[in-house]
Length: 134
Image (cartoon, rainbow, N blue to C red):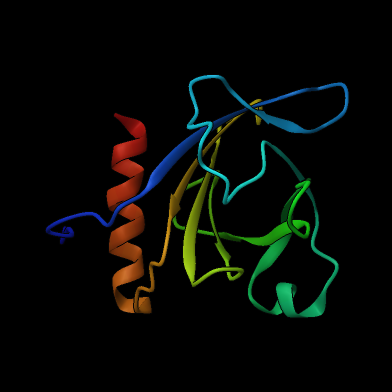
């Protein structure tokens, strides 16, 4: 399988599910200085037609105090429980959302300023999936 020579710069974050309110909360071992993603995230059904046309059945949204609300569609990948999203507030960025089988843990890889052609996207996702599984 083809791999990237060098992975782009990324930030890795961890979240844990609060089963009472349904929100994922950033864990202590995450990068507290990283502010592109909120400390709290929640999944919900994708209702907007443009998101459903992009292949997102769900969205992930977050509460932020200083900025407008974060949200992105969760688009499936070839890996179970691994989804892609994006953040277009600053510059195009790729986000990988890796849910545990029981959905109680969420690992996020945020690749700031990353624009990958569709042909190479599958390879990049596979490389990051290997990194997540280490």
